[in-house]
Length: 238
Length: 312
Image (cartoon, rainbow over all chains, first blue to last red; front, side):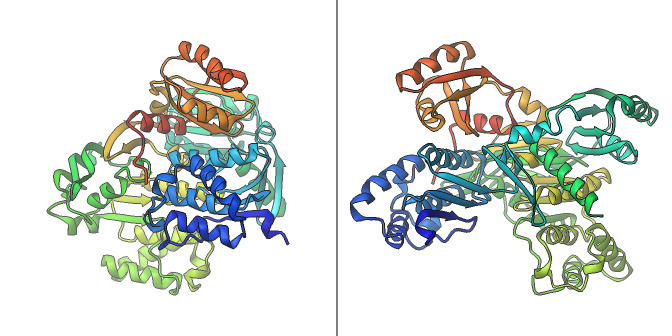
């Protein structure tokens, strides 16, 4: 019987929208058979984290998106599970509420709980102690965010130019360019061999009237790492 | 460049509540304009006014030269709109969805054939055109939704949280398409909660409590964060956040992995006060130093400085 030991929260958690905040929490307490004598202290604690106490009598359906997610998390945690499984917990949640959700998760982890979080956003993954990268059913990598980023250390450069869109399409046509990704005004660029390939790449950009304003190595993001691993895996499949 | 969208003191009341409060900004043709803000900030109400779905209470907005209050019908013919809740019909095939949207937008005859083929090629769906939409992977659905939104070749495209829930690889290929549209002169208006997505935009507007509180390029945003940002390593980060949120001179404190990011009024003061406050609470301060803020740090600090979010 694993269910009493885990908490599961999905992006579309089963809150009852026509019950109040408190009624939802009571319902999940009953469902998980939380002893009556433990309930007041646990509810008080969860209210403390989530600031849901002042909305105790509001219908769950009338909460904002962020508050709904917090209530979902509180309901999932009411039975003091050992492991939390959170499936895209911050889906559609704004950055302010997202910080509050993460704070609740960290409070629980500080007490010895284990959290497993799935996310499609790699800036969220940066907040985890360890990250597993899955693609098409296969585990591509499993390590700390720092170690994953270290794979690409020194390989990614940011390049700012007078015409970023034209520059990125020119760069993508060159065989020595492994990746050229446009981020608004800057390009993240990976070359086969920076020392060998940058001078002629630079020349070619200037020859097409694209001025290079600045360039230099940058810290790779987890997203850079993920994309690179997926492309390498795809190349291996072919 | 000419302005594709001109917004002047745009305001919308609902009863006694002001959802959008005298908002003014312009968007140039070909720009990728990001629209950020916490839930309840007034983003959706603004987008509804700009797409001709809701009349402003006062102020004005021109979209592709048309007045949102007077010419809502023309606006609908000159914009594309795609939301995270795709408006696709799951029990129609890819082809049938394209036909339906073409009918809605009045794209007919030879032009329909051209546009349909273009959408199928752009979305990489040519070989899936007879599949039920419900059976497509999310990334394909998203590109089909985008294709249907631009069937009538609109000069302005509104994207409402376009990549929620799709994986990073699909997100990148989606943005490659957006850049192609922008390069061809389409103006793109994107609302998002994800800073990874905001980084792709050429300019960002941040709304809170109905007002526009910041407007800049992503790099400008990071440079203009008024408050110094400190990174703290401690033995109990969640407890430290709770303590710091009550500490005078601290605007915002949040967990980032195992460390804490703290926006403060004064760096020198904070470097001496924070270790004391933590020690008094029985917490250790193993490292505290200034860092360059991320877009998310800037977002949170601007919103907190403007009185926080509307809770509830």
